[in-house]
Amino acid sequence: MKKVVDEYEAEKMFLLSEYGKKKLLTYAESFRELAKSFDKDFEWKETDKDRSGTLYQRKLWENRCLLAENLSEMAQIMSQVAGEVFNYRMMEEKVSRKIIQALKAERVEVHDIYYIVREDGKKSIGIAIRTDRQGGYRTEDIADILSVLLDMRVEAAVTSPYFVDKDFRYYTFVEEPPFSFLTGTARAIKETETISGDNYSIVESEQGKVTILLSDGMGSGEKACEDSEMVLDLMEKFLDAGYSYSTALNLVNGSLVARGEEQNMSTLDICELNLYKGTCEFCKIGAASSFLKRAHMVEQISARTLPLGIFRGVDAEITRRKMMDGDYIIMMSDGVVDAMEEHGYGEDLCQVISNIDLRNPKEIAQMLLQYIIRRSKGNIRDDMSIIVIGVWENS
Image 1 (cartoon, one colour):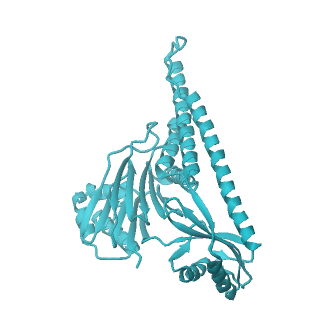
Image 2: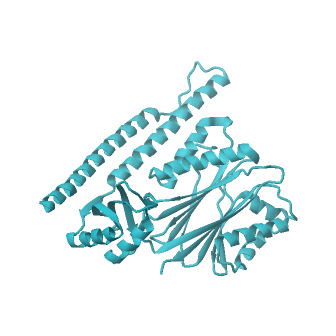
Image 3: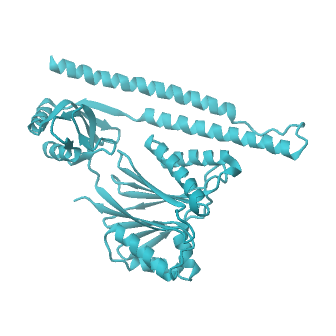
């Protein structure tokens, strides 16, 4: 009887998945049609005899175009999600029984357990569990037990809670990626201000992608901080919703353009790591150079682009690199590079980074910042932020 119930549950999940795909594709098509209704060429009307009237009509047209682009982006992400294939497969009875017994010995009760196989072949484990242990049970300890029983290194997905408590919840455990990372930061505030206009964020996904964002608000102080915070807040929300960083970037830029002159400009520096593939992508929107350090070899990664919110389209340049064990990525705001160039040491930055023998990303960031402040004779004329990302192969 249990086998029949399990097969029914697996089939039900599959049917729900197909139903969801069809609904998403229907929504996507609706958004595309709506986008077409807004996307029309600008028409100058004879009644617009004065310049202000023409500018007003032009602004309305630009806003309609932005809305059309955003609707098209939303349609695209819906189609992408609908196109993802998830194969929910019930776990073999012998394996599931071993897991249930092992967790029961740890006072962890299992309600449901199954495999989730993605289109790219990556396998995850979905499990509904609870515990009556005082203080709960760490999901990383559950991951260790599953790794031994399944003979496959797994870790708790970033979307799963950190603890197992008295209530049944669904947890996802994913294959451990071949690479891991560690970040460290160092910051200095402009000497005439009390708050930095630079802000950063790190967003992780279940697909093993890590997106590091650094935004520099134009100017300094509270207003610059608000501007860069808003950019990062929007990017985080879109990335958490499943948008790619390029799609999120277009949506954020459209939002800033629609605000017009009331919105100050902000730069955005993006570095996305793929821990499964061991690759890295750099995307700079008006941002300062980044550096890729491999032993004593250093590559400077730059792009001549404008900040966000100036034009409807984002002028983004993407640089891709393959990562190796022990690589370091160094991102920095304009204030760091400007301070070096102002005192004639801009060309020495690669050499300084090359000579660093430290291994801890936090220590590297702090050492670099202290070096630059010393070179500037203690003068901090702009906000300075340094983010160091270390990448290592998992043994």
